[in-house]
Length: 312
Image (cartoon, rainbow, N blue to C red; front, side, top):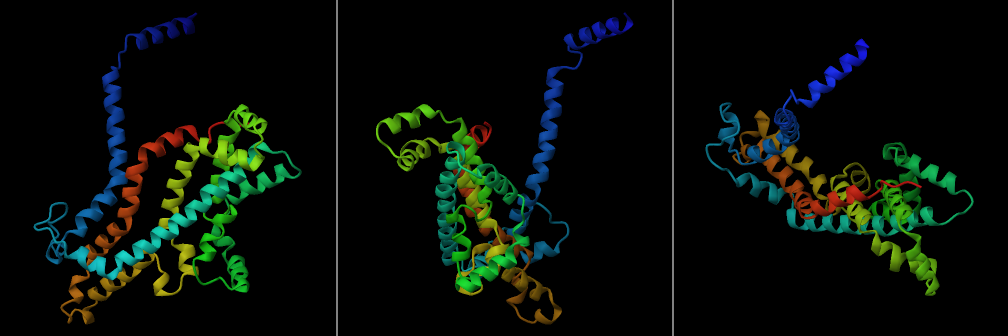
């Protein structure tokens, strides 16, 4: 009886809303603000530092508000990154690899969702395992295979796996498409079969056009991941004419370290390669991906909400 009475008192306590909803909402906003500061602080630091002059960088009192905007950092970074040609090369590489991921991974995911065949469970298990295997553990045998094929030096080892349904996190994209196609009504495909469509034609005319949500999610993730990937391109792209934008950043940091060396400060130009130059170069590398995400953020959020949430 005492326990029942205590429960009733607690219920009355909650029903009276002793803790106002506005207070709870305020606490939630404060927590979200704290989290946003944690994530946005490096970005703000990068932007502010990129417009600091060498004098402001040496002045410890200048933290967030600079005395004068110093855009020469961007000029130096733009020239040393060879920005236009490297940007076009990186965009082309990302688009080709992403196209392979979207087309092939959706096709494989459709096969896992709609067809029954021997060894399907084992293959899907291997697919799930492929999502957790780091590329560093298999890079040596991969490189040896590509060397024997004569394609180890170039973009083919980076693009070919994406067009074979693997590549950079390709297993995850196959899983996303499979989960979506499991939730797709079979009546649409049955109607296409009655009209005389083959399974392949049904996929390209019915299933694939209906999978806009996983397409958007896979496209955004694939572009961002390929853009920021440094490990594999650093192995397969050896010549300067093949380097991507993220691979050019170490050149800026090398110049910055050289300028900080006392033996290099005799040159007037050496002092210009500061932390501000490095941050300007970093911002130029991040900027295209940032614009891409801002353009597709609405579709990406909607795709996240509707993709990969329905099982068998």
